[in-house]
Length: 203
Image (cartoon, rainbow, N blue to C red; front, side, top):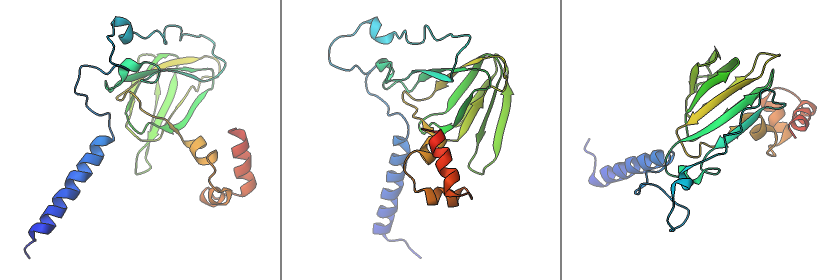
């Protein structure tokens, strides 16, 4: 059966649109060497960031993330890269979360960190990392990091393939955004009081 030219045109437009939408999910390519916040001249200080210089804390009290994304370091705009330093007190966890716009390359600098991600078929890939070990979390997949050591802190550095990787915390996005408690109770096979207790703990 022959396909009419109008159907071929429609299919071509759908293909182009789908490619365009997929492309827009990543950082856009820029047509200049770099992007400045205004048209004035910049010097080397614009390309320098000191925000990570005092990150080292041998005894952090809480799990802490120090970011170097385009929000903190505007010179990263258009460069498709960013960093974060993660400090884990003993037994601290970075709860399940996703980065919708970038993969994450995780490097342990101090201590031991258990990491893992879940793919779209619900298979868990987890590993215990030592100092110098790296692990990649694929873009958009739910993942976590956990300092299983209850006596020593841990430090890691994350590199992202986006100037603004984004962060979607699974516990907060599910339990603190106003989703109906009955929906949550049915979804998690529990009751509303349990859901309310979880919600209270995340405030």
